[in-house]
Image 1 (cartoon, rainbow, N blue to C red):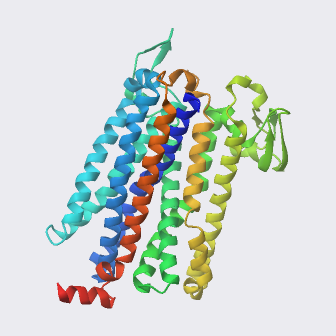
Image 2: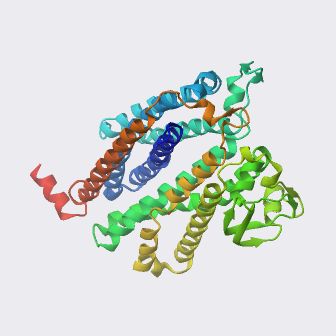
Image 3: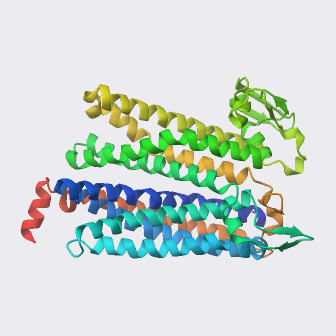
Length: 447
């Protein structure tokens, strides 16, 4: 394997793996805190057990995320020394602040896990809530660093030198808010649907039905926030991309010709040699409206840009289509659930509805991974958009393919361990977490 390809593959694998734990860390503590709040308000022991079960899951995923995040920080220096040499002093602030947020999160989760019956009940609840706040802040700060790569600012680039560095301006770059908002909404959607799907499966198996029903309904609530917020945040992000990176927008839509009243493309197969897209469904003027709220505005096509600056069109386009498809599917599922909740209560316990959420378990994360593929692949061939090419930032050290194989083995091992630990957590619900279960009461009597 070519070293440059190996370096990019290793980074893609690491980011794709870590982003899952980042999203869980941003959202899962809020589910935990909400269940805890319900317990404090109602004194229903089921909510207490649910809080404890989710808190153990948060701890497991936090530990895994800490490992993968640490590996990523080493990889930046190992694989992209040219990038870190120049970019480190400019966008180092969000990484430093992210480290602070990480330490607060670690302390808060320790307090929460071992604070039962030791702290004031509301201080204990606040510790759990703080886990969520610091996890959310951590994710947003990392996105700020990535956004800077898409919208570099906070410095003057003169004769190959990075001068007049302003780290505050670099952190709050033009892409920061749109990316952070869309990422946060996507995290709520993906995590909510994933958690809801797991608990829907347990309800269908008739295991600890009351416990899993309460968990399912909380998770669905968070999932709906993400699903219905995604079109709004996505629209803001798309308008930002159109303004800052028109070539990325053109790649997303496989839009080759500059035109007014540009069509929004659904599906299709891009042909880069013939510079056209085949078999696509085109909705006239919609792309122009989405870009500028004007049905007749001009949208630049790929032909307006040098071909050596084109990102991989097919990968960017397909990833964008996958993100849109699963986003729409989740909105439809959310709409069905809301209709059932308000007008057809009997549907809420039907197996077909539970099965729908079970099938949708991975949909949010598929859309999330596809969205990040659009962000990263669509920026190529630049690692710092318009300033530094990715090929110029890669390490000259040979043998990167072996590093890629090694890191792949680590991530596969972590995944297997994680699945094992989370599966055990679910299996222990009757004994440790559900007070309505006979096994739970038998265990307490023995102890």
